Structure formats: C-alpha cells, structure tokens
Length: 231
Image 1 (cartoon, rainbow, N blue to C red):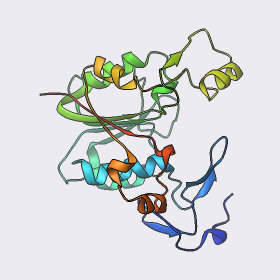
Image 2 (image 1 turned 60 degrees about the vertical axis):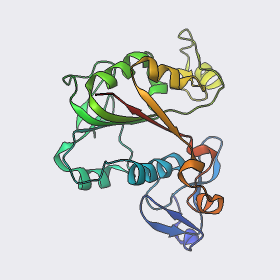
Image 3 (image 1 turned 45 degrees about the horizontal axis):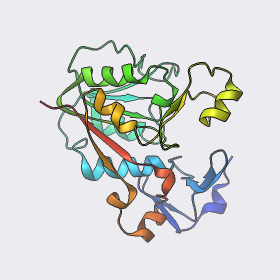
C-alpha cells in the first residue's frame, strides 16, 4: 500500500487526475522509478494517452459517440463514464466489472457500429491478433478512429505459438500471459487490417523535456497508434 503522506508535495503533475505530488511511485517488473500516480494509478502510457485524447481527438467534443473501451483502465473509466454518457461501452473477456463480456476476435456488434475504439496493451495477450484488428476495423464506422496500443519491446515482432508454459512465456515474451513481443513492424499489421495509421511520440506531444519529465512521460510511455478507417 502506498503511503500518501510521503508523496505530498509538488514535484510532479498527473494530467489524468490533475493532481500534484512529490514524485510518481515505482511500478513494474523490474520496477521503474517515477512511474505511477499515487492518486489515480495512471502509468506513463496512460498519461500520454490522456494528453493525446484531450488535445488531438474529438472524443470530448460533447457530441454523442458509440465508444468501445476494451479492458478499461481504472484511471480513465470514471472520467469516460461521466464525459461520454450512454454511448460509452466497456468490454473485457475475463473481468466481470466490464459492461459486456467480449472476445475481440469475434465482436458481437454490427459492421460500422463504433465511432471510437480504445484498446491498450491487450493485443499482446491475444493469439490471433490479426483477426482482432480486422474485427476492430469491421466494427468501426467509416471516418471513425481507434487507438490500439501495445508494448514495443523488439525490433521485429517475435511470436511462437508452441510456447505455452507461463515461465517460458515470461522468458520469451516478457510476461507470463503474453503471446508475442511486438516490434516496429506492428504498424504493418494494423495497415494489413485496413487502417491508416499515424504514430505520435512523447516528443511530438510534449516537446519540452522538463515538462515531459514533470508529467512522468518517458520512454515507458511508448507511442500513440492512431488508426482511422476511411470513408
């Protein structure tokens, strides 16, 4: 449990919950210094995504949208429910707290149903990720957009379906329940599914290095993969 008293101060700022603290808490395996907001639990990638959603998308323009949020992050979900209203749908295959149970390789919604799809750090758990990407494309409206994030931990994507033992997966893929390591060719899989993809880095989003550090935006934030389906 985090002792909030020791984090009182104003050294860093979380853009998700709009709160200051002395530092971000360590998190991860191995632990990353200054990673997690002690108030809302946001990590580096969440803070980058929040800034992107606020400043680079129309998600919060007040117009009704059908939004699919796969494996919703606790640091986002309350704000999304409040700001997005009845069009907001959370989905997960295993978590009973989600609004619907969903296998993203077989989405039980019509073609061109969603205006927005958000899916972060899920595809590395999915054996047939290409099928999931095609399902996202199918259910996205023409001119809709999706943000589909994964950890990029290799130069070239590596997967081996014969590796099923959790400890062997930990060694091969970095986590017991991962089925691959994504590389820089991840974008090619998204394009093969039909998406037009724009990549945004931390520096693109927050050019000032000191400001980025104050918000805990580091290499661990990854990159934003903004995927659109043409009209």
